Image (cartoon, rainbow, N blue to C red; front, side, top):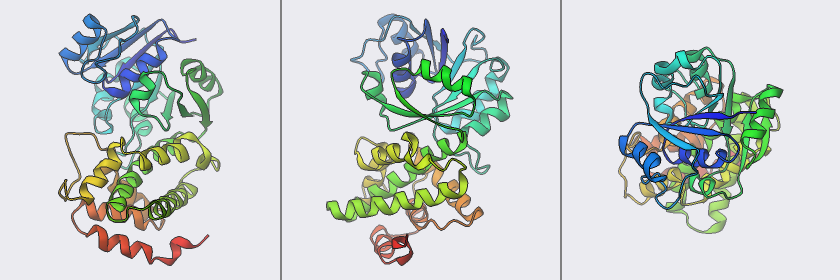
Length: 328
């Protein structure tokens, strides 16, 4: 049973998971970049930047991320930072990661390597005890203790048992394919952007759910080639997270698509100070599709629009007429 957990990243998801698991462990330490966040957690028991109305449990403390985090006592470390920062952060603290369980909740692909976060963490830390955690969850709802589901990616039976205890407030399912669990999290962000774009042009329910089904069909075609877990399509990381992110306006990636479609945000758009993981990963997904000879016109539509190379309405009309999307 785990008693001490470190969470790299004191943002919304890191803080939410700290609050959730703090009822099941003795001590949780949040590692953040900003002194005001650390002071707020330690002195006021709030993360005022993300959850100003949520009083954090007393066994949660915070420290600044530095070259030495004093992680030796942590039996598990959750990595909850943007995917673009994972390699540099893990490389900086790799000497402290040898004898612990590493859990990644970061969603993204490194470009141009096309590596997932678990690939990067293994490469930098040399620690094979890596678990992916992904599901249909908004951080604020986790923080306030609402029912939540998640997929645990690991083939290790003992790690599954440990994760079941640590994340005991979640409804869990499991996959042996760690990388597929992560790729579901990448794909759903791409399709959430695409759905937002589509809904800015076609706004009724029939049109929305027709396109949603087209997206999920394309996503499953990709996973059918990439993943050896042939039940991945039914799991929280896949069907559940895809539906949440593509359907709910609270989703940042769906909102990005809507804002581009309504010309609130201009293209080309492939980066931002706000974390839209889908915009950073779509190029990698398109290249993986080409590598494995998988036809993914919707992912390419999203990429083309983000690059400023295509008109949303013109491309959306083209997708409607693609007969192969209607084939079984």
